[in-house]
Picture 1 (cartoon, rainbow, N blue to C red):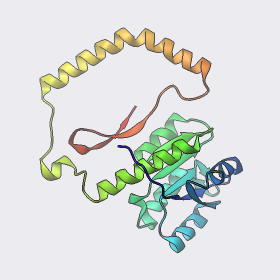
Picture 2: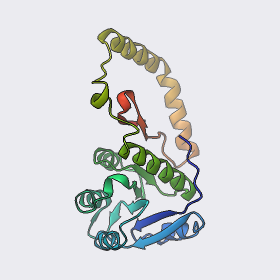
Picture 3: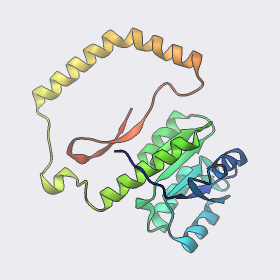
Picture 4: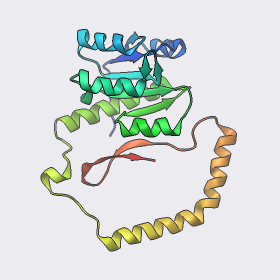
Length: 204
């Protein structure tokens, strides 16, 4: 899905990282940027302004974690389901990443980050959420019934995929080592995708 829009993104940033704040402020041609330091101020801002296109929150903010703030937001902000929520961390933590995905956080970035990438991602997530809300993408069980893969096909898929992974494992280990030597970034990528029956899943 390609999304093209000239409208500025109204972004609420929650946190105290001045470097990131400065980066977002430098993108004023694309972002209507608003910043608060903690979750209490964020909730107050949302009560006063109501409409926001996305929330970017640091992993650790005064008083609680970004994940805890996301939980609070779901119970106190009526538009939370339609607003992309992105978590920003100083370093990658596999357990926190898994927890973020489990609690429905839309994306997880590790510094340093490219603001243009976040802007593009927000536009995609916003469009996806609008389509889901308007029921343009409808869960299969509400219209067609639950889709099930046959036992033999599923067995064949697992057998073939497992065999290929075993054969490719040495090569993949070399690729992982090369990436770690050449880059400080992650050696894998994850994102949300629409799968069978229009179900959203995490793609690694």
